[in-house]
Image 1: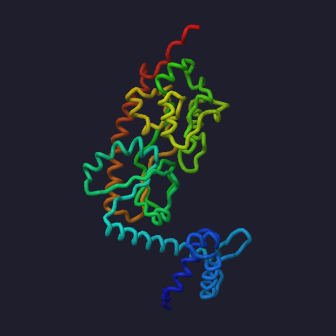
Image 2: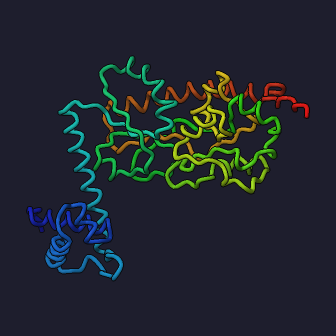
Image 3: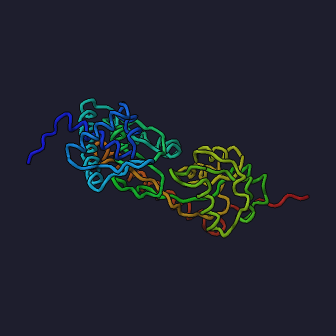
Amino acid sequence: MTTTLSASLLAWLRCFEAAARHHSFTRAAGELCVTQGAVSQQVKHLEQWLGRPLFVRTPRALVPTPEGERLRVVLRDSFEAIEGALGQLRRRGEMGPVSLSCSPSFAMRWLTPRLGSFFRDHADIGLRVQGEFQALDRGRMLREGIDAAVRFDPGAYRDVHARRFLDEWLLPVASPAFVAAHPELRSPADLRGELLLHDASPWDGAGEFDEWGAWLEQAGVTVPDLAQGQRFNLSQLAIGAALAGQGVAMGRTALVLEDLQAGRLVDLFGLHLPSQAAYYFVSAHGQSPEVAAIESWLEAEGARFRAARTLWLTRAAAPGKRRRPPPRRPR
C-alpha cells in the first residue's frame, strides 16, 4: 500500500516529532510557534489516522509508546537528513563562509594566531569563527547552521563525525612575579586554596574543580580549602589572572605553551598530567569539501603543535631543567 505524504500528514508528523523530542506539547508548541492546543490536536489526528496511540499521557510528561518511539527515531533521522541537505544546498548557492563553532579559550589562544596559515593555503574558503562551548549534537548543528565545531571535552559523540586532533596536558602555572613573592611554594604540598585560580567550566558538564582535583590526586596532595580560590567561566580568564600575578592557574598546554616559552609563565613543579579531555573536530555527516579542508588543516597544525610541546615538556622534565624555587628570604 502506498502512503501519500499530504500536507496535512506532514504537519501531523512534524508536531508529533517535536512533542516526542520534548516530551511535552507545550514545549513543542513553543518551538513550532503555534498553540499547545494546536500541537495536541495535530497529534490526535495522526493517532486517529494510524488507528493506535503514540503517547502515554502522564501528569508530568508525554511518554512515547513502543510504536511512537519507533516513529520518533525514523522521523528524527529523516528530518535531520532533509534539513542537512537543504542547508548545504542553500550555503552552496550563497557561497557564504563556513561557520566554525569553537571553544572560546582555544579560539583566542591557539586557533586565531594560526589562521593566517589557513587563509594562505585556502584563500578561496571563507571562515567565520564563533566562540561557544555548549554541547553539540547533529540536530542542533543542522537546525542552527553550524557547519563544524571544535570542542574541548572527553568525547563520546554518537550522531556526528568527531575526530580528536589534539590531546592535552595539565600543569600549574604562575607568573615569575608571583613565584618570587611566594618562595614557600616549593612542592605541590605547599599549595593553598586561596592561591588557586579555577576554570569552573572546563567543558560542558564538568565540575568546577575537576582539573585541579585530578592534578592534585596525581601529585598525591589534598588541599582541603580547594573552593577558596577565584573562579572563572573560561580558562582564558584564569590564565589572564595568572599572567597578572593573581595566583596559580591550571594550565592547558595548548593555551599556555607560548607563555611558558617566552617566560611570561612558569611551570611550577614540572609535574604534567594528561587531561581526560581533548580537542575534537566535529561535523555533521556528509561534510562539504570546505569543511574537510578545515579538518585536514587542524590535523596538520595539531601534529606540529604536539612536536613542539613534546620538545618543551621533555626539556622541562629533564634533571636541572625544572623550575628551582627561589631561595628563602632572610627573616
